[in-house]
Length: 332
Image (tube, rainbow, N blue to C red):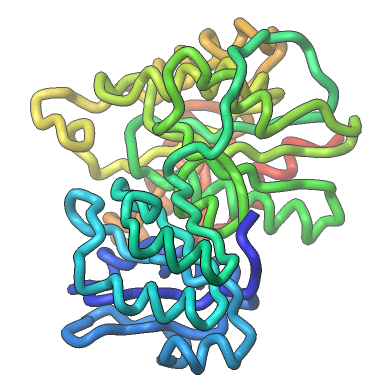
């Protein structure tokens, strides 16, 4: 678990998209963020106070989150001085990049000297067993998608917010690095060895009280040749009672694969349900979360209306409409 509150490192990010991890933490857990650290040349800025490491520590920060997602996922050498300052000031370091903090001897030595932690959240810090598919108590929801990057994390967090506002016992279960920063814990499932993916999700969302909902962040898509294995492991390990399909209607091909057409939405729902039934025979899809950011408002609403009529399911844009119609389907 990450120690809170957080100081967000946006470094030299050229735009806000390059600082998407920091932006996600601020959007969903603003109460946990004391400020941001920007380096020379940074063009990304969050609506938070710009602070030095020392100012962040004085404001109570306990973890510096490296909130930059650069091409290749590497840690530039010129960031290291800032990280050393953070360790010296008594902060842990949390990193979601492919490069590991623990591969930098100077950071390892400084962390050991100060009793601080280097948290490479993309890389599991424990071993997992294989999944068993044995029935377990509690209730679980998994977001799935027609493609990658269609809003599965956003939708899962929106569901948590709506359910908690209704007094429901619901918890977001993170399966990617940004989600881990937001929730403070989780498993970056794309870094788990394939045989143990379903077991990792069984560990992440274990048996629970009958009224408790674990809301599991989905990854990838069963229809994406690059990432379908992770998606299938999530479906089996989640043992979900319900699925929420996530979709982006303006996309013309699978992300990163220009020769691979997007799947039919109804076929995608049916395929995900069929795969999920291996460990959850009574699973059902309660609706579709649609990222309509690429459509004009009037066109988006017309599209959602047609889609809901065609599928016979609630279809909402979580950013515009919220997710109340989806949560309605969870309650008697």
